[in-house]
Length: 340
Ligand code: UFG
Image (spheres, rainbow, N blue to C red):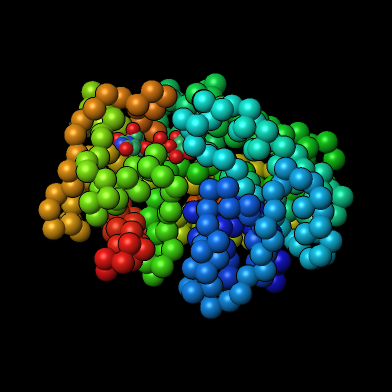
């Protein structure tokens, strides 16, 4: 069975992926510097899986950190690389922080993978690389638009770095996954998203509002060209997303798999902000308080995935619907805050 290094494994998507990997019998090693996560995340992984996961505290901007891991665990077969900054607004305010962290970490990782003959990489990219596409849904061949934030640009540049590196000598094989909007929580309610400070993203803001931690949700714009005027996204349950990494690993182990391939990971369904509110309202005693405010600068109007390629090639099928996503997020928030 493969031994997998999960960078950023204490984070939201990383921890859910570690859980799915361990459940399926993979050996997992986590490296994280807790820049946007907490040590308690490791306890939650242990609670759900009943397994101790080897953990290395470290920052991938230091290449020695990665080299030491590959030396200590000399048969790592796959790296799943989540470790990166991801706040769009912060990246506009502090672009160098984003380029330095997200790009340098990846370059260090690729150098070390080559040096230590680690053959497989799965990389977290984002549908942000599509910008506002001219046609929907987006396929992997939809032309990319210039990134609307330094964060988005780091994902675009990272995709190019990986592709160029592979084309230069086939040292590794890689799958690039373009995530749509990951939401939801482990079905146990024992692991979920834990943003630091005021949440930027919709679901954690909604669940915190539902519990009275925030007064009211601001809905950014109701004058978009959509069925109810609010912006549309393709929300994907984080555990479905986690399993896409495992299906990608299986695919990479197939000798006929190309050296580099890209997949959209979304459900293929677009939902508006009001659709999401209507969904969570099914699980609340009183309707979620919200008000319509101006559009958020940089937001795209609507995007959803054509996920045919992931279904046909990776044999990956999302299982959870929107109500599963909102109810699992709420369940996690309640359990975490001790109100369940
Ligand atoms: N929204 C609100 N109120 C909020 C938060 C969000 O109305 O308080 C709306 C946004 O305007 C948007 C939708 O909810 O229409 C989703 O917003 P998120 O912030 O949850 O997600 P984004 O689509 O903006 O961003 C996500 C990821 C990014 C990624 C981007 C790619 O968080 O990392 O998708 O489109 F780059």
